[in-house]
Image 1 (tube, rainbow, N blue to C red):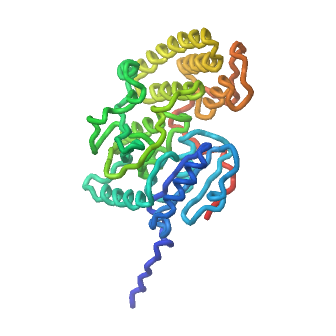
Image 2 (tube, rainbow, N blue to C red; image 1 turned 30 degrees about the vertical axis):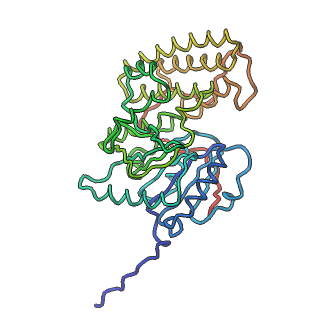
Image 3 (cartoon, helix red, strand yellow; image 1 turned 90 degrees about the horizontal axis):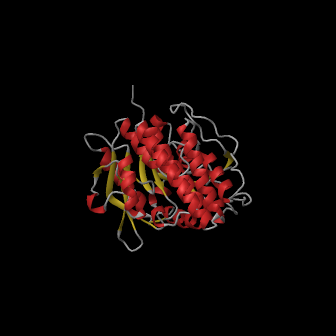
Amino acid sequence: MPSSPSITLAPSDLPPRLTVVIVNYNGWDDITRLTKSLALSPEVRDGRCEIVVVDNASEGPIPQELASPPRGVRLIVRANNGGFAVGVNTGWRSSSSPWLLLLNPDVETGPELIGRVLARIEFHGSRPEGPPGIVGFGLLNSDGSKQPSVGVEPGLLRSMLGQFIPRSRRKYQAGWRTHPGPVSWVTGACLLLDASLMRALNGMDEDYFLYYEEVALCRSARDLGRRVEYDDAVSVVHLRPLQNRAVPPKLRVIVRHAKLLFFRKHLPFWQFWTLSWLISVESRVREAAARWRSDGASVRAWRTINRITSSMRRGEIVRGRDVLLMAEAATGGASARLDPAAPLPRPAGISPARDASAQRTADGVESFWISE
């Protein structure tokens, strides 16, 4: 019996090898610039790579360039801002690629990035021990100097000593100690993920609204026996790293919550308990200082931090979007500015701690797509 003829699929008929996920909130200028550059990649044009932009309910109209995006680019518009992890999970769940590349909107790169990343995927996949679960690529400042992107394992002693380290270097490992190979964690600004790891973890932890979600992801990957590695064979320019920006009161609430949440979920309880009391003392002192300066937003922010800390000591966990709502209510963000002396409102939907292993879904996705 004659054998059936083999069929060779055109590249455009094959599923993409790589999905680039970019989470956006009010960064349309950056998104337009970045997607325009990436869409010129031959790997995007022939279907080996796709670009998925997840918008977390940005203000203002969608730019025309993305309302009618080029080939290989998709836009998913969420009905609310659930945070970075929710955005990443939305992009991941919409894809079928074996690999994901997370990019911050404020990175600069050329169309050659995709080909270089695919080459590194082949390199890591050919290693005898198999590929890492997470690969962090290099970050550069605008002047070409190296930007910190690799961190050491968080802990109580490190957090206490960090108060004597400039904030720009507090969270990251010193550059002279950073070498390609296994590391504790890597930042999410330019991050390669094995989709099988995401399936095993049911995605990124959506209890984090912003900050520490990539630290938690790397810790969870290592707990499963998957390697986390730094690879400087690929690098991008990162324009506005968070550690170099001023921290407004609203963001301070979100950052303190993220740190407490990581300690509560991933470190011994005594470390969380000690840190929570240190933050409670800090919040009282800084609230008093802010009151002396007549800084109402900071007064409310530190009061909110103290209440979140107390709640978490009682076994409750304020989660994801609820943190944003509390921070905005405290600092006059999305709603009207509030009197600093008024009682702190508690948004609906804040629930006591649930089983950390419970599966969660990316809710709040508006049910329409703007596609090719």
